[in-house]
Image 1 (tube, helix red, strand yellow):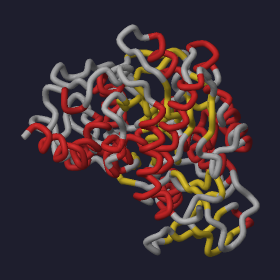
Image 2: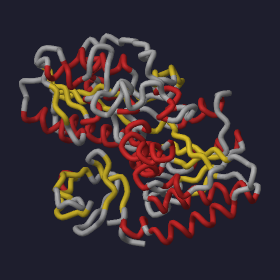
Image 3: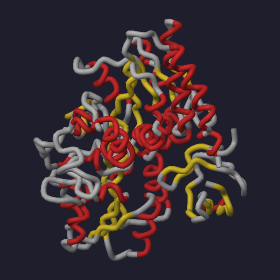
Image 4: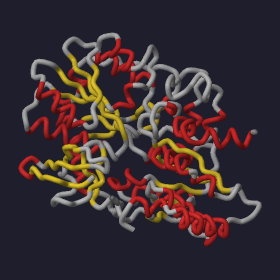
Length: 371
Length: 53
């Protein structure tokens, strides 16, 4: 298949739905986690879960990069943005994530020079256009985004852009998955593996899931047929008594990943001993920081960053949503106090957040069911 | 995104998305690229070749 439309073919979707139905055992409940926020978005947007049997449940994982940023990290960003002479740059979604006393968007309204960018390269361009100002890029995201930041830092050094630095909040996907698998709260039967993260890291980092925990993983693409086929492949493994890492997204994901990206990440970043995840707490070796070799481009060394720790609001249940323990609509404030216009939790901010995806696409179907 | 021009000296390409909007894209991770190539782009960096149009 060559065009996106072909991956959204309704007739083929029905065929896959029929195959899925033929693979499930009546009376058994299957709980599959889609790791990536992009999958969550597609599942709700295209109504993929409506095509699944009632005993196949999809739960949402911790793979939305905006959703996992803790409030304290937002507060740190706001503090940096208020430093004299600083232009603070970040992705659009990040501007709306609530900190303890407002978001970056609120700080911008209060006078801080905060600018939305589409890429770290945009931030570097702003730095070159404003040599008398300090430009800080708030880097977030999983292994998909980290190479982009790493390449930009290398470019900044090569081009001698001395007024550019980065506040690195990149995270890695494997440690939270291991934490989830160790959690007594959650019983999972398999994983829809993250497609674009795997483009970078490949399939090998997920081999511990079948090896250590006996659960199948199928790395899947983001179109509806990709996800349905991913579910079908997981259920096929379960029916056959197999558990292994399979790659449904071969058109983009090589088994070994992108070696150039891994190389540049290893050069520019190193693992933090631990990093705080929103709702999940501190997870060992789950965050990246800028390596000593690139210390001069590290905003956390260039400026005094408060290192704020803030507890999540009591009303917000993003942590449980990110762990797949509850569904978005089971959160106490979903759709009432917390909406995409006025989010309390991060999961309601990003389009990849489970709450925002469900609010935008899924709630009407559920309302129909309730009526 | 589809590559419409290449700045090989700087490792950049001008790419267009499905809406016809143009973006500067870092190509270091997928080189060599050619005009007309379709790339999977994330945060301004091409991370893989061959995403569907």
